[in-house]
Length: 184
Image 1 (cartoon, rainbow, N blue to C red):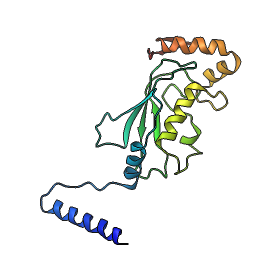
Image 2: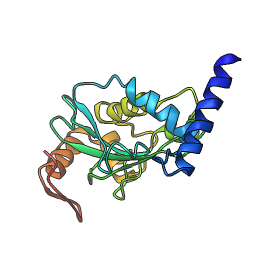
Image 3: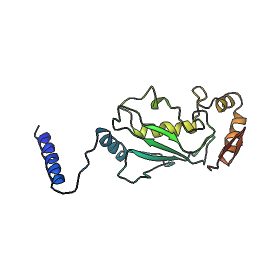
Image 4: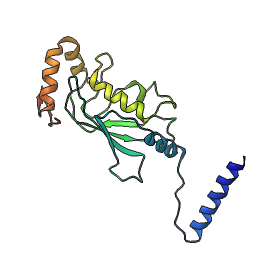
C-alpha cells in the first residue's frame, strides 16, 4: 500500500513540474508498459532482428526482419511491420509482411495468416511468441490454413514445383502473372 502512495505522489510531482514549465512527461498506457517489458525480455533466434524506424520513442510501431536458415525460404529476408494497440495485450498486434513473398500463409498484400494473431490470441502471449510464430511459418508453411490458395495448392500437390516457385520469387521473378522483387 505504501508503494502505491509513492507512485501516486511521484505522478503528482511530475504533473506539477509539467504545469510549471518543466519537461512534460507523457503518461504511458498499460499497453506501452507491457510492450516495453516484452521487448526488454525478447529472446530472438539469431536469424531475427527488431528495429524501430520511428525511433525508440515509438515502441508501438516496429519492424522485425526474419532470415530463415533452412527450409524453402532459406537465406531470404522478410520484413514484418508490427502495430501495437494501446490496449495490448488484450488485443493482438497488427502484423503485415512488407516483403512480397510467395507463401501459402501470407497473401500478396502482406496479410499474415497466423492463428495467434486472430482467434487464438490470449493476453498471456507476447511479442516473442508472435515472432517465433512468424519464424515457424517460414520453416513449416501450412497449406491447410492458407491466405494464398494458389501457393497452398502447389505446396500440397507438388512440393517440388512449390520449391521452384519460391526460389524464382525470392531471386526476383514471376510466378504466374505476379512479379516478386528479389529478397535473397
